[in-house]
Image (cartoon, rainbow, N blue to C red):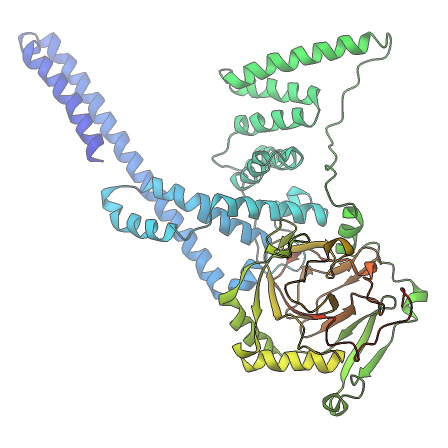
Amino acid sequence: MKRWVSTLLVAWFAVLGRVQAEFFTSIGHMTDLIYAEKDLVQSLKEYILVEEAKLSKVKSWADKMEALTSKSAADPEGYLAHPVNAYKLVKRLNTDWPALEDLVLQDSAAGFIANLSVQRQFFPTEEDEMGAAKALMRLQDTYKLDPDTISKGQLPGTKYQAVLSVDDCFGMGRSAYNEGDYYHTVLWMEQVLKQLDAGEEGTTTKAQVLDYLSYAVFQLGDLHRALELTRRLLSLDPSHERAGGNLRYFEQLLEEEREKMLSNQTEAGLATQESIYERPVDYLPERDIYESLCRGEGVKLTPRRQKRLFCRYHHGNRTPQLLIAPFKEEDEWDSPHIVRYYDVMSDEEIERIKEIAKPKLARATVRDPKTGVLTVASYRVSKSSWLEEDDDPVVARVNRRMQHITGLTVKTAELLQVANYGMGGQYEPHFDFSRKNEQDAFKRLGTGNRVATFLNYMSDVEAGGATVFPDLGAAIWPKKGTAVFWYNLLRSGEGDYRTRHAACPVLVGCKWVSNKWFHERGQEFLRPCGSTEVD
């Protein structure tokens, strides 16, 4: 502010200097001072209006944030269960709060700036905002949601209302663009135009949207539409230098295309590509099957198979502890045999394990098949921690319970792993056991391969988050307090490739699980080997 006023005063004194030099000798010259002073007063008023508008914006932001944080702080997990809320929280802290910092960066706000600067080191980064945007796009693809549905927050099982503004949608499109993901760029930039056309206000302009959109459709091979969008952009901003260059380039390409097509056909007209674009094929061969199972489609639970599924009381091969209090067991699949156990963990035990695990949560890792070293991977999006029996008596109690239920020893099993899936959290199709080309995967443990998986569901999930088996066409939905169990290896020790499975993206909710991987060593007499390779 001082610098601005100083500039103002310098200009004013410059005018006065000239007057003192010449204007006093002529009223005509002095009339120039009147107009100069009037201009200064008008400039001063404009400055005041800018400051008042700035303070009004800050007050409006503070009121909005106060209302929002009072609601979100009352139920953090419930609030963040809605993926749009989670995305907007990350976006606000990475983009909007720093923008506010720039707005109020004055001497009078030194205290706030100091506090914000200290807090900012703990804010989400650009990488976090990109990750949050990718999560929304993952949900969009997996559950076949159009941008309008996500923008309006019309998701199943949602507890809170949440919408994406024009600027939020533009941020989504720009994130996709920066990743070279032109398919999602087009979808989200078209949503921005839709909301702008509906009269919604924001800082994003149509010219900005058309700039991104025209280049994105060009990258998708739609030259005709790229040309059309570029012309629209130039009609809004004739001085747009890049658009002018693109227009000439697109026209040249189109002319070359016409000449090429005319040389091959005489009467047929030039076809214009439809502005509907296919989602690019990615690295996962069973992507369509996997995602359809996540939506509850394509489940191969036929009436004939269903007749082979039963419920029973399970006493764990007459384990003394279970003879008194057997567990309810339900068949989820016949072959390979996948079962669900009920009331495996109490609410109190679940909360205690979550309490112990939270401080230790870190980005979930996968074991590198070549080196056996744990590393992060883009296809596994969650945070996890490993609990030892010494951490709390409840961990030892849960471990013993899993041993009693399965009849397998936990002495050679891995530690209890606790995982929390965030927005769009997932673990794409994978095997729990190591394959023949990954023989060193568990070499460091010295306990052989993973013979079985015991998976505890520690929360309900409002939508999404199923455990699916693409090769089987099976989908198992989380139920708090229940657990599912299956063998990864056949009795011969060969891997059962039918157990390739995945954790579907969480659409709405906060998914907590814990699991125990049992290993081969120590199970020789508890689960004897089979006589053939397929036993």
